[in-house]
Image (cartoon, rainbow, N blue to C red; front, side, top):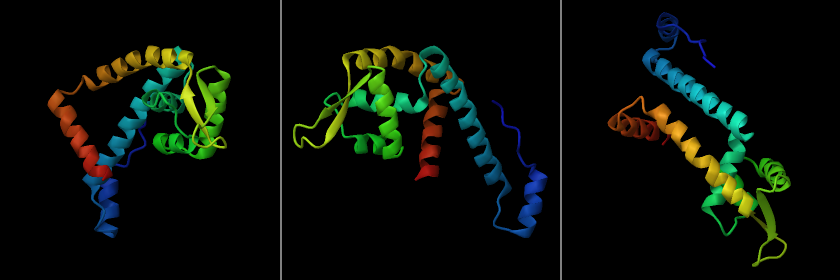
Length: 160
């Protein structure tokens, strides 16, 4: 999906004449970052949906659970994946239904539960991730390694 709803430099300069703090190159740069992120995300998500019937959110859940084979609390999973506890509840129920995740009572506190990958979930995640990472590598292949590192540094600088 290509986003083309951008203000022109002239339009931004008109706004800057009213509010001098507006920096047209900064606005254009941020809009371009947002456009690129959305296009890349749509491209990656399209493949995930078509090839694996997997949403970006479910993939993030599988990745985090793969990193914690002993299982983790749903609240921690929500925090690590950047979604609400309610969203994790729904996603985990679907992944349990699909046989990829299981919910167990915590050994420390029987009232608490933890989520972990089933053997099928582990195998599925390990099947999906190499192709997913290869697609990302190919997208980033348009940049040299130095440019990739510069981009990482610039994005870190922008996001704190």
